[in-house]
Length: 533
Image (cartoon, rainbow, N blue to C red; front, top):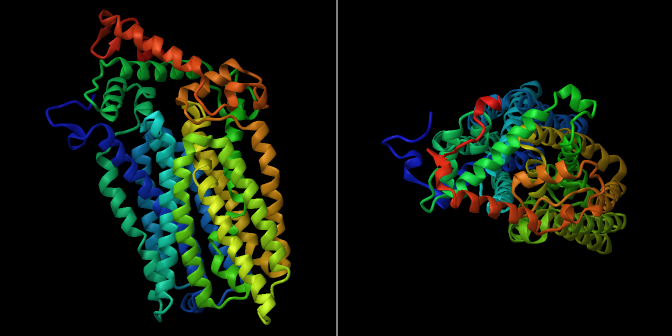
């Protein structure tokens, strides 16, 4: 059943306004993610929390913090299995509810076991949210807005991270358990915002059309386009035809999970695309961001030798710098493209970790010279965050959505998100012990990873900027053996290939000059949904 009735849907909002409200919901989900990711960095060095949990050693601290990531991984895997049948909106709401339950359990925890269970539940909800919000955002956004909107949602992820740092810093001057219970409970504010906005917003038009609700999907396309667009507008019909074409081809060739595991995916490049999307998330963790995101106060205390209060303050100041510079990524994402952003960022981050390691090897909190080296290392922690915020914060969340085909978009995004969380778990679990046992040498590990990723991206990763999501499907259908992207200019150029633009214009012209072929928003002769089912 379509969305048209006597009462205007979405409170009468269309076009840019409606796109902005979808972005508000998606960015709130990612802000919640950032807040939850950063809040434990301040809590893990809070005396009241440590006393309540029985003063856990570094290994148990790592377990308490990192099991959240196992929960996130589980949430992403659950999304792979169940999310497609429910749609983007419903699944996001389910995730918010689960995450809220976890937040309440964390706030009320008095034992390590209680806290671990609560962290796992919270993680499951966050895994569901972070697997779904970028997909919903990408499938509702205009092609020219898509990259910027998803990068903006990751900037708001940093804003949530920054907020949690300042909140735990401010409450560090308060005695008692409120110093850590209130920051945990505050995440429920974001849950409330999501629960009052998501239900009335439009479902993904691509999901609707792919599941047989063509009229409703076309109406959503027109509503998102705005500017007087209707279901009969040539541009809207062209978008619908692109989606139907992709659905038809994929349903004819869509392999089972067993076939995917055996590499039998026809000419869709599905396995390569799944690996590329998941690879961006593995790389995001292995560039070393969560060595500091979860533990920066601990790093500054144990590696640099700063006081608890100064470590908290610098971590909070760093989060503001991180947030400010991340806006540069919003400007660069479509201009520079995904490939250049990741390569520039990895190169800069490698240099930062090399300098951090070298300076910390000479740092000594007991002498003026040693303190100077410690200050230098702290500076390059800040610079590292600049490179990461500009280049790496948003792209790994955007890329899996863009590189995967329509039928695999939810599964591909969830698999990539699961990759993020399992690699996140590994990094977070080993960091306290690594800092304690290896000292400055621990940071050399992340220098090496960053250096390796530059040529890896250059050789294997196609550009997805400035393209329709269906353009990537065509690229892989027409280049079955595409692995080394440097052999195909269309795969690595930043601009949208001209032939895709020409085909789109030709199709719009055909629709525009053949009004007799249009009836009730459908093209005469268009394949009906039951032929795709």
